[in-house]
Image (cartoon, rainbow, N blue to C red):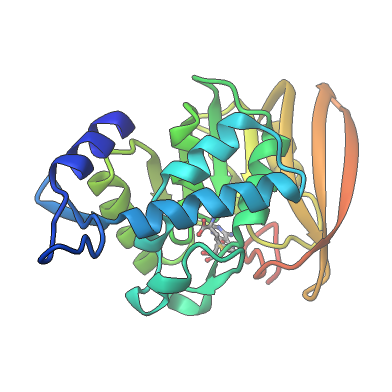
Length: 248
Ligand code: SAM
């Protein structure tokens, strides 16, 4: 898919006089127009170099971040800044996570092609897109209808086939469980046991846990029916996970 997009981009190289202002890309698919440019692509390349410097080494993650047009997942007012390593506001008072955070969580998940992954907190759909691009079969839950709807339209336009669900993600998705991996992209007060129970034995849960200001990123391996091992990383700040097994 990516190769087709890149080829189409080259075919649609638009020149203004003698100056190539930018390779304006109009990718027409499912009535959608996704606009990308050499400028955006160059910025993505710089962003992946920065993430590598910051310790992201998983080539699948870096390749996904270097390929997914992040500017499409945020308001066009932020388009120029879309490849800065920063979180930005989206609708409903929520955020699209900082690229480093998306990369760090995705790396902790150790994604292999074909794995069944549950994401709690679809938001803009950007992390779902990264996980899909890495070959995961993605199920993603969002509690805001507006965000759920717009992520659904956008991922469809990008031909990324995530299963998006509207609802309270703290309950997990029992009818599709068990999952190889679960990632929570909002800050939780505790680890919801219901999510651990929806992992396969040997599966991984990546979840930020803490207070409303800062959280530690936990990478929890389900070792057995009632046994887990946890590694924690400091220094994250997410919007709150709100729901039955989250903040009230
Ligand atoms: N992964 C997102 C992205 O790439 O844009 C980042 C999402 S944002 C940091 C966290 C999201 O979690 C918000 O959209 C918020 O509405 C959602 N959220 C919070 N509590 C939730 C819950 N119980 N179930 C589903 N989504 C929830």
